[in-house]
Image 1 (cartoon, helix red, strand yellow):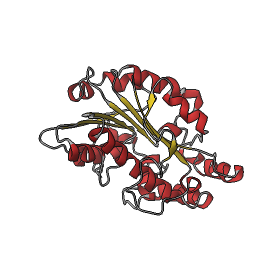
Image 2 (tube, rainbow, N blue to C red; image 1 turned 90 degrees about the vertical axis):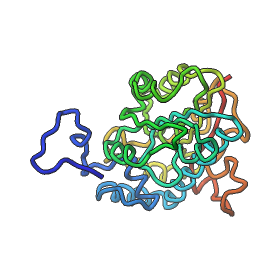
Image 3 (cartoon, rainbow, N blue to C red; image 1 turned 90 degrees about the horizontal axis):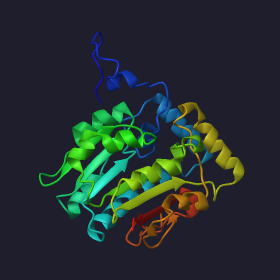
Length: 282
């Protein structure tokens, strides 16, 4: 992690100017649940508060990460996808999107997007491509799809005329209804050609007692407006895939999506409380 030295000056748009370690950030809180070290006291306190309300949240975080890896592996190996747009990257850890994809096809090209300046510092240092492929990192917010789609680094890395896998893993539940997440996803998919895919996961309250769901949401309330978790039903999550062709097994728990070779026994749907799905744009 890098920060400006004492007394150093930087422009107002400098990413380091946006780092507020007193407020928890979803990417750093997720890093804490996964056992990482790139987090601060506010992230740990928020993570523990949410774990108190939902004790298996670390299992959910781990299974969500495993779903991403299985989805990327399927898309690269079975679907032949060679371009990935991963929004809500998070702090890099083992087996990131480009590492999984390039292990299958070294020529794979990946664009990462996140809005945490600490993620930016780590991503640019660690998310290095194979010689045959390419990676890029965009400092942007999912709520601003136009900035993402028009970014020169995206246009240099991804050929918009060829299929792309849009990865929205554990990010959509941070977009409230007021920001119309369905319109955001539609805009991104509209920019991608037929044969592209959407891979997504989303937290749900379907398996939680109402009191537990409310306590988990309240625990995240101190993280600022973009830290709030919007738990959605199966039907609400399925709506993100409208007009797409779902890949088997369709909408299911993140712990169950093509998890035949994953460590057994599998966590229950209630323990992870997250849906997942992968679908093709016809």
